[in-house]
Image 1 (cartoon, rainbow, N blue to C red):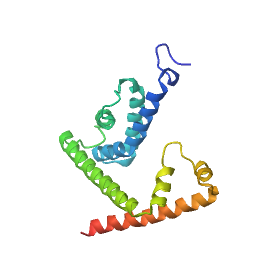
Image 2 (tube, one colour):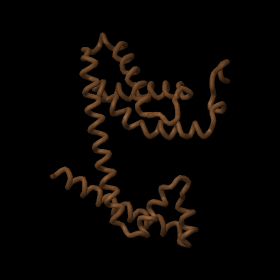
Image 3 (cartoon, helix red, strand yellow):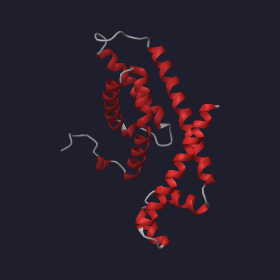
Image 4 (cartoon, rainbow, N blue to C red):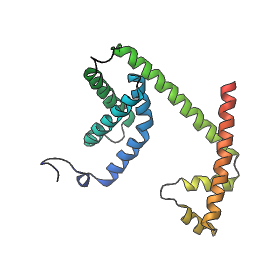
Length: 186
């Protein structure tokens, strides 16, 4: 039973909650990377990420849709890291917060560049697929799409559609891997 004045999931608008959860899930990898860059300890980073996630959820109503969710979440994470450092100051040698912030920002920039490289390679590889293969793989990742619905629409068995998707994914994986290896070699 919620405490008096506590906001429960039932009190939150569904559409807004779903948008928040989508942003939340999307940000997890970047937040973890940011926290690891700040604390240099993957175990501590996992704990701090959990603390950050709790705070984000508690502050759900403070997030304004249309603003940069990751920037907001990163600031919450930064404050959680500062609290962690205060709690553990006796156990670890403190590093200059500005230095840590600089390192974290460099790490995030590198992560963003790698994500962009992967996206660019995937775009090129998708364009190389036949139109029917490209349409099939893109349809599969539309919200609410399912193999069984696709099979019904295409008048094929679900197994046949699954095998086609697996083949297309293998082709894309090989193509993207080759593009990224080629980019790294140059």
